[in-house]
Length: 217
Length: 217
Image: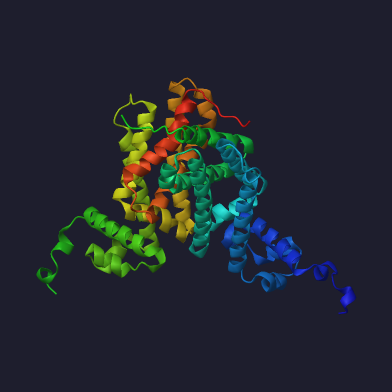
């Protein structure tokens, strides 16, 4: 078979573009079917490449799934980080609001990505659960550093140092859980979700920043 | 071998007591080693019974793990439900406080139980992840019904109906995530954790109950 009779598009694209196409396809297929039921044939079909090319570029199905998790985790964290880094002088409530908006906007615009990252990765377990756990730790550390620096600016740095990481874990868990709930309640609008969580946690954080403390009676 | 030479304790206990011993042992062993590395020999050893008895009473390792998840999920939900059902006339903040206290008290007093329910079950995935997901749904429904009935008493029933389930999902996720964080930070005291979360979410919920709404500027 001469070169001219081969499909020209399958040859011409640089490797990174090709890999991106395969990963895009894989996220879609894994999101729809889960890890076990997803087939490499379908990934190749959706990506418009041959199955051997999928293996050559991205390895086994396990490797491919791992790479999906890594890429989607990075995309999610980048989206949230970018969303809050527009202005260093932002008031703390606006900072939190922008973070929550960015998170729910990412999830809303990338439901396949979130489904793979959250539901599918957890339902497979094993090393994938470890990767998700690492991503969570990174997210919590990121939020904790914002909580601590905000608390310090507000003059309650010592309290923020003590409780910041725990509060960050709670906040990340709340956002994840609400996004997970959203998968089963897709009619709720993205901005509504962000508002619910903002109202819940800011009217909380807001009073904490003033030094208010609730105590049992 | 005559009956009189057999270990007498292995014969005399009723089946439900024996099953409880085996499940107690299994929760401990699964918590320490995870599902895959845990051995049925060790479960039998810790329970003080023979390995065939473990299989006869509780089935395969998968069955045993499933039964651990079911029992521990029920214990956790019962503990929290009991903790809040002492008085029907409780103020809403006290209701939430008692719920959070009960939750963290259960986790603090039953770390093996929580580790199996949360970390180990998720890291195995598959049908176990489905069982955990069902438990989460039950917990969220429970919390949502409290949020809605409290909101209705406070005259904001319509808002509570709309956002109650989402807020409940956020609250359950926050508590789970903080309890998960606690596994890696065991020095923090149980009451401290409950206070952090109470301060975060009540000073939130508290203002919401007054009809306050935060809006982006």
